[in-house]
Length: 82
Image (cartoon, rainbow, N blue to C red; front, side, top):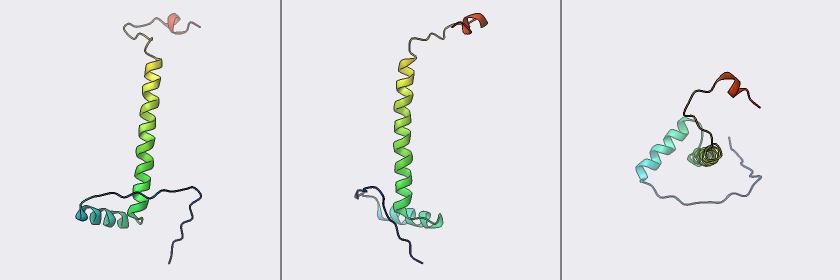
């Protein structure tokens, strides 16, 4: 059985350096999950970059909410004011 991968986007090759034993362990772990080390890394990279984007969005949201004071309890009427 052969797997043919067709990319619909441009991909870029990168070179990483790691301990040889660590690479072999990672390859075995990927094989146990029926995937390749390359695909596992792509998934990790996607999650990692998404997390970084989420953190930037969170920081921007918190900056936008900086003017809100949470130092006291508000009355129901105050919370429902428009």
